[in-house]
Length: 84
Image 1: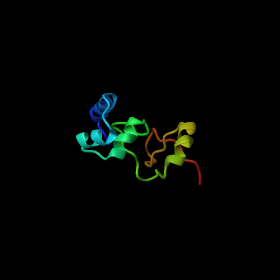
Image 2 (image 1 turned 60 degrees about the vertical axis):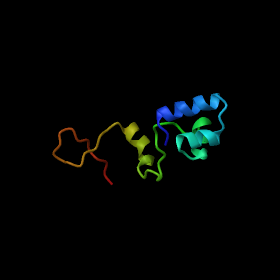
Image 3 (image 1 turned 180 degrees about the horizontal axis):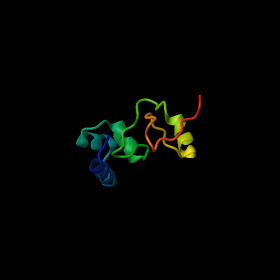
Image 4 (image 1 turned 120 degrees about the vertical axis):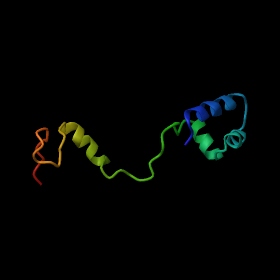
């Protein structure tokens, strides 16, 4: 992952005519990483996830439902959980 500063520096060096390999050596990064940031497939400051989030499929359901379900039955803000 590149920081914002490294990303800005990489783009500036590329505009000056530096090769991707030279930029990678200068920043101490792999050339494929530098290429990914220069072509826009990766964004600085954001890590790629290595595993798929098992709850991602429920995100839209929770957004549409609009309720927050708590595990504490005596909580006055708890929504009623759907019956299984």
